[in-house]
Image 1: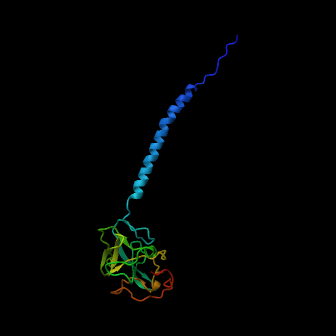
Image 2: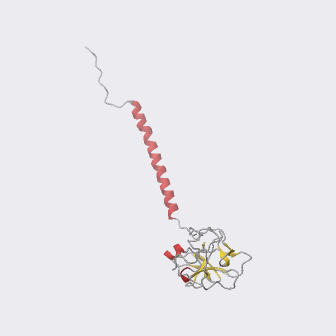
Image 3: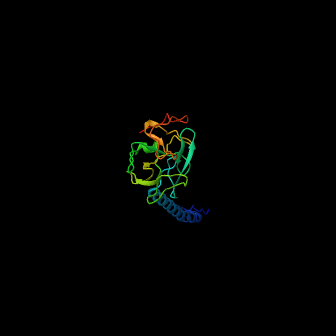
Length: 195
């Protein structure tokens, strides 16, 4: 008689070993994913206290120092920390702003962290201060005017926001008060969005 050996229904021992080794690896992978998710979630929920730069993305927590630049069409104007032209909105008051929502997207306010004290370059006279915006952020003012950038200005030395809508103007650093009438500018005072 032939001795027949029936195949075993059990898995080979090496398969049991592989399954046991895979399980702790799977748990470790899931734990790593959970930690990464928690880290991303906590950083996404933390508030950002800085917002305005020439591109509208935000000033850093460092001290904000305002300077001036001379532009061919409007003379000496106030500029932000990166050299971009600053503007004021004629409907604002020294203690409040009316440019919010979509207006603040086109005209990003120059903001600083609460408690910061902006300064002026030594060559500029006038008063620099801050006000509280409706959303609780802190906006820089010069000579009683809340300050803004214009998204249409893509580089320092441009003043495409000058005179837009008859309500937006550069801030002159050579005069005792900012310009109150539009200045026709070959660099762009005729286009854009006025609010």
